[in-house]
Image 1 (cartoon, one colour):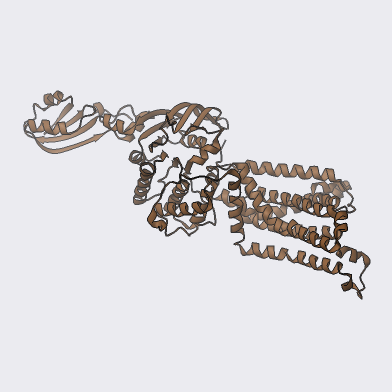
Image 2 (cartoon, chains in turn blue, cyan):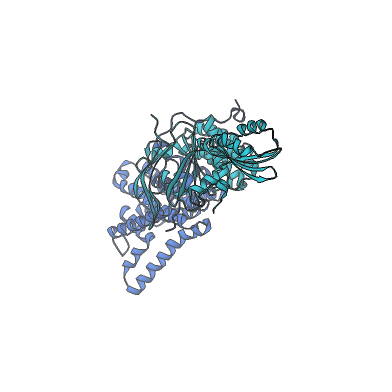
Length: 288
Length: 322
C-alpha cells in the first residue's frame, strides 16, 4: 500500500545493536560529502601524485626501460621505492589530507552547533563520545582514501615487483607508512573537529585548521631563532609527525628532538583537542 | 504493575552554583496507558531543566529520576531508546532534506535502514509534510519546522513523547492540528505524552494530568478531568417575573445567590452541580430566563492559585485578589 494511504503506526519491531548504530553517522556524512563537487574534485586531484608515484615505481622496477637514459644511480634507487621515496609520497599526500580536512572538517560539527541539532542527536541512544568518534571516523575514513590506502597500494605494487626478499627486508616501510598516516590523520582530524566545534562558521573553521599548523610552525621558527636550538621544532606538530615518520621509515632523521619527545607532544596536543571537543559537545548550553 | 512514566526521588539539580530543582519527589502517570501529563509553570520554574534531566542532559546533584522505570543517569541509553523528544528551540540538521534527517534519526534509534525509510515517509505524511519531504529543512517555514520536529520525535515509535512548547510559532489552525496529532498519539498509538507548555489552553485540550512547578518544586498536581468535575460553577442570571423567593429556593439546592436588582443574580452552584438543576428550579419558580451564563474554574485559575498569584478564583465570595 502507498505510504500516504497507510498512515502512521508506531514501530514496535527489533532494533539494531550499538555498533551498527555507530556506523550510521559516518555513512550519512560520507554520502553528503561526496555530493559536494569540491570534495570530489580535491579527492580526484589527490590521486594524481599516487599515480605519478606508481608510474615511477613501474619505471624504476623495469630496468630495461631505463637503459640508454643517463640517470643518477641514487635517483634510480629512489624511484625503485626506498624509504625516501615513501617519505616524499607521504609528505605530499599529507598536504592533500590537510586541505581535505580543512574543506570537510568544518561541516562535521559546526552546522550541528549552529542549527542546534545536538539535542536531536543526544536525545537518541548515542553518547557524546560516540558522536565524536563517529565524526572522527567520518573524517578519518575520507582522509584514508588519499593517504594510507594509495600508500599501501604503492607498497604492495613495489613488493610485487621486487619480490618477497625485498618485502621481508622492508616490511617496516609498509607498517611505518600505515601507522605514520594514521597518526597524521588523527591529528589533522582532531584539529578540524575541534575547530568545527569552536567556530560555527564553516569558512572560519576551515581557516582555523590551516592557522593551527601555520601559527605553530611560525612559533617554532621564532623559538629556534631566539634560543638557537633545534628543540623549537617540538611545538610544530607537522615537524613532530614528520620526525616520527623518519624513524618509522628508517631514514636518517633531521637534527632536533627525538621520537619520544615528538610522540609525547603529539599525544598532549591530541588530548587537548579531545578536551576541547568534549567541552563543546553538549546538548544544551548552561549559562552559569 | 507497569512503572510510572516519571518517578522522582529527592531530585536536586544544580547548574553552576544555582540549585534549580529542589528536592522533588513525585510519581507521574503510568507507563503504557496512553495518557498525557502537562507540565506547567511560570518562566524559570524549572520545567525545561526537569525535562533535560529526564533526558540525561543534566546530571542530578542528588536523588534519582526514572523514566519508564529506567534510571536517567545510569540507564540513559535505555531511556533515550524509548523516548521521542521535540525540543523547544529551532533544531535541524543543515543541508539535509526532511526525509534524510528523519531517516538518520530513525536509524540512530536503531531501526533497520529499510524500515527507517518507511517510517520516515509515514511520519512525514502523518504530520502533513508529505509533499515537502524532499525539501531541505532550512527552507521550511516556522510552522513546518515544528511539524518536522514532531515527526522526528515519533519516527521511531517511542513509548514516551516529550514535547517542549510544541505549539510555539504556529498559527491557530496549525496549532489545532498539532494538538489533534498529539491527542492521536496518545489515544491511537498508546504513547505517553509529557507536554511542557506555557499555553494553558493547549494543556487543557490535550492532557489528563497536570503538574504545576514553581521555583524548582512541584507545587500542585491534579487530574484535570476530576478537577473539572469538582469545580464550582459560577452563574450570571437575568430573569423576569417575581424573584423574591429565589434566594431561599437556591439555598434549597445548595447554591448561594446574590440579587443585584432588576432580575439580575450572581449564583455559585455547589461542587459537582450542573446548570440543569438551576433550569428546573427556575421553571418551578415560574421565572422567565432572559440570560444565563456559567463558567467553571479554568486551568488558568488553578494555575494562578497554585503559583500563589491569586488566593481565590475571581468572583468567588465576590472578591478577587491579585
